[in-house]
Length: 291
Image (cartoon, rainbow, N blue to C red; front, top):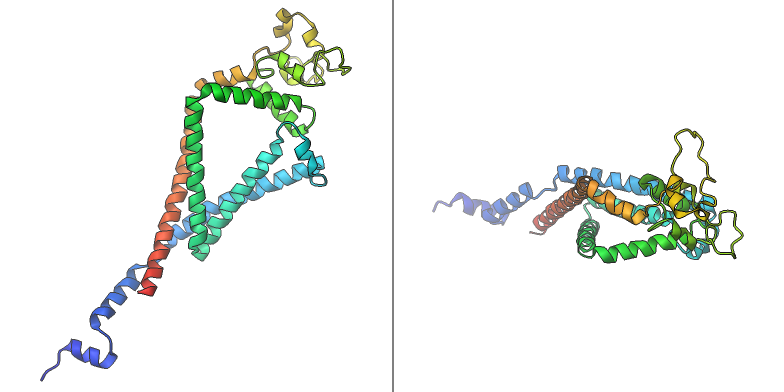
């Protein structure tokens, strides 16, 4: 009796030819794409390095202010320390960048899922904040007023906060939350009789209308300004509040804001796509090995 080639192969190897064919098929197709692997690594190395820079700058700023030797200075500040925001951004970027880089190189599904899930969470949080800010504009305006006023109170307590407020007022040509009177909230600029500060009834120099003839910034230009009649204030200082200035700035630059938001969203979606694709490839390879 003549045996078929399948029977002869089965007799020699002890395996079914069909299973051998299927086994070979799974190995030939289930491979991790080097393209997605190293593209995801390159994507994350940028964020990881940026996180290192943010952390380095934040820790350097804290060391210059002596916060590293006395961390209670952060809790004693009534306003917000801008360095805290820098460090928070640095920690998030460093952690995500590290998880993405190691997860891609080591083909670690756990780290890749952590990276992907966190990016998805951040994306939806940004979307929710944008929608809520549009729907509840009055509430956002009140919260921003409270935030700005609390930082006015701490203007002289932290040099970074002081520089942030000065930059905001100079860039938007504004003074205070709703006007120069808001600087009564600060103990140094308060007009009450109990104040003995030289800056009493004044405003910070960033509220002053710049003089093109002056090449050196006059940091005392706001002294005693609010002792004058209100009708003369606009001759030397900005009288518009920063909240109104920002409300006027947003409609004029809506396309820039929308463009930045879309660009950030596309970067996040691209990172999610790379991570999900790489996870699928790794799971396919593992399934092939277990077959």
